[in-house]
Length: 252
Image (cartoon, rainbow, N blue to C red; front, side, top):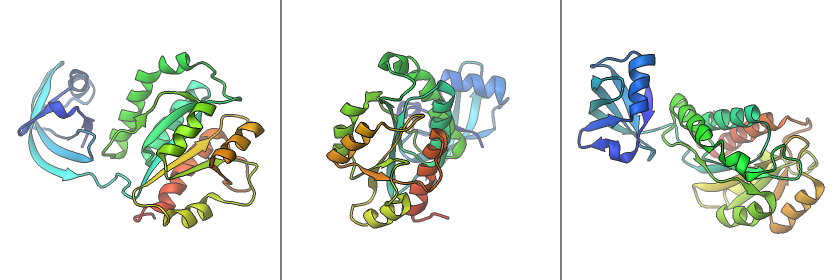
């Protein structure tokens, strides 16, 4: 069944009123008619099975048949990805795929080697990126839409990241001693669940040497992703999948 994230105000009693753009999608694209069933989610980790009673080009509503907790949300880790800014297509691919894989939040980062260097360029894309996150969460069965935080420069983001997360790691091709899996296994039990985890992934060309040194100085732990150098978008998806694999109790 199709899934739609709605604001909490859309749920009134035993009815759900969908957003106008969702009604247009139901009517024009999905060709849904009264009697069809969909899932409605309010971003809290709960979902409602809804039988549509009315579907028009600008409005749709239905009756609640069932409420349940979404099982697809990570329970033992809240992963925030700090992603170096890059060309639009690659960055949007990372937002989409890492949402599907289970990331909880994203922070766009301007660093020395970022292809984008102006915060204003990022903010202009925010609405589009929010839509990508919502659609990826709907498609993958998530119960929450990941948070997209404002873009930050690396030097300002580092201390804030340390204050907000129990464990902060930085994927770096120059690290040869500490692998991501070993660090997660060793550190995970030292922190309460759900683990507030942050992982930094650099832009094309990686982090500059002085950025890695600064990260070390404030308490960030560089980790290796293996003996091969990965593209940025590959690394972002890899760290998401690996973190969920090592830390989630239902990992395959």
